[in-house]
Image 1 (cartoon, rainbow, N blue to C red):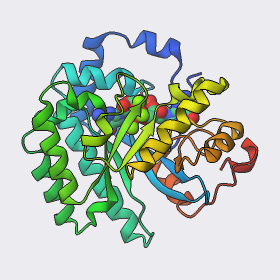
Image 2 (cartoon, protein in one colour):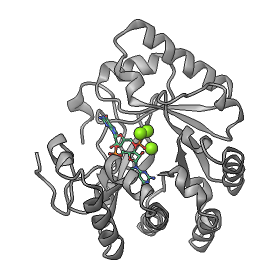
Image 3 (cartoon, protein in one colour):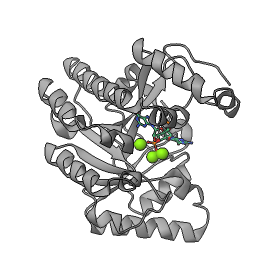
Length: 284
Ligand code: C2E
Ligand code: MG
Ligand code: MG
Ligand code: MG
């Protein structure tokens, strides 16, 4: 339902809504306009420590202001039409501005994860831009986390791995997103300079089957043996939460804890502890 699309509400995406926006040209126009007129906003979804229930960080998720179209739809269009570089820069700039605002308000800062599309690796100045923004604002670089997918290995693999090493050297941390989709070769984990893997929701959706639980458990063990932390994405109910806890999954993210929130809502839950009981116990 297209409710609550006002400025202070979160955007929900229904299939019908997406179908009506399925024209690339239309989306291209929307994106160009939004880039010119501050038409984007970031939502922040908390990531929870599986053991303590504390919020450990947030993931920044891009939204078109007041237009209910998912980034899963408009990011690929931005990539195809050469808009991802200015858009990606806007996201970096905005996350850093937000962190600074939160610091100025006296909040104890939490790291914020930024999704980077493989196409952004073609931006030669990406690193310099990020570094400049971090130093200009006197931010601890570990407050920035970069989320990449294994697609960064598809084109320009060696070059992109070099960029990742430089990012790590800069002090930002790196998470491998959407693990369990695509090829997800475990081999990647041994040579990609990453700190964390994020298990895709689709892995866990087949959870009920015992075999899948074992597979997830094995992935978590392997990740831990390589000194990587594991985040489960799309945790929607307490059964999943309990099961993942048993498997020693470090961190969790999902609607069970919170949907992506506007900044003003996100800052209210900085110090919230989620108990992980029934949904009503944890909703905010
Ligand atoms: P992602 O990075 O894997 O982000 C996780 C997605 O799962 C988000 O969708 C989030 O809202 C959704 N999600 C979180 N918890 C749950 C849950 O419990 N259940 C379900 N069903 N979904 C959950 P969103 O915000 O629509 O973003 C979709 C994708 O768009 C992201 O997937 C990411 O690949 C891309 N994206 C979003 N923001 C940016 C951005 O700033 N830059 C780039 N390059 N890509 C972005
Ligand atoms: Mg992500
Ligand atoms: Mg993901
Ligand atoms: Mg994803």
